[in-house]
Image (cartoon, rainbow, N blue to C red; front, top):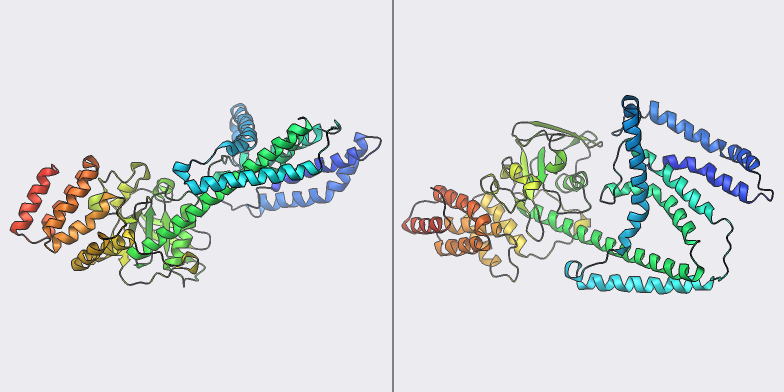
Length: 495
């Protein structure tokens, strides 16, 4: 982060030259240049010292310069690609970035309240800007120095991108790479301020007010998006400790990405350790890691095979684990957080194939989950949410893990009388299994048929797997045989 704005130091002499030149009555460029060199020299020496320090002393960073070696091996191709990258970055951080203010919330997607508040923010900010700008409104325009902000803005934008172009990091408007657009803000602001000077004053007043108002609306909308993401994260971790009150040390947690928009797996790993290992003050050892397979496969996670050692350096400590000690969670709100079942979820089409979590299900085991509550929820995640469907589902799945089938049935009797309901048909499986072990075959039939009707093609295969496990684990009886035969026939389960 400290290097994002580093190269912008080279923009300082242009600012100094601008003031030296424009404030000189004689407008002598050579005089302004000499003064610029003299005034910038102390800053340049500090800049030079930092370059030496970064290249030869503090040079064990994650990112290293790749542009210079590529220019040596393929100068023409690398040069052309660099020119293309520079122009696309400048286009993206200026016009494309500002084009986002013309995206508006959809009441059917974002909710009517959010859409209404967005409209209020835009309207109020627009009126305030018109009022403020009108106080200093002048009809007559001076043509003096119009081009200076434009030229300086383009120079600042060009200098802003080198920390990323040198190490071949993509500059995009998507999270999290959109943080690389930060150093471009100075140049873009100067550029647009300069371009607005070429527009008639009265039009410029209303156009500026409109752009500022739309930008404020977008900021409100994005802030609300972060708020929603934070709410989702809190719900996720509460469901996690309901289902997994404790985790054995050195457990690798695999989880799908996409449920949260603004949190990488490294960020969530910090929270995971904070919750499950709050007393760990070791400067060397981290007891839990959280990986998104889509980010880590083939790198920090060699493959989705058991028995592979995992070492990951979190900078504050090292995690040492193994792919034979994995708990795989799948979270796709509004569905509940689920510990993936190797038997059921390897063929579960409700688990996105792009998430790679069907393969991760084969590694997952609840053996690493301890039923005793050792996790401690940090105060920032409190208070505990109201107990809805997901609470009873998580508690029932924990009871299933320890073989407390009566507890599963008791929780099911409460859960199915709530106003809340499951958003994933697979959530009913734990209760189907619980009612089967307790001999309540009417409930087994009803819940199985309810789940199957939601999507026969998707629910059928994992449901057949569940019935096969029930057949294997539940003692034989006439009711059992009749119920399972009837359900297997309806679901077209293979023998």
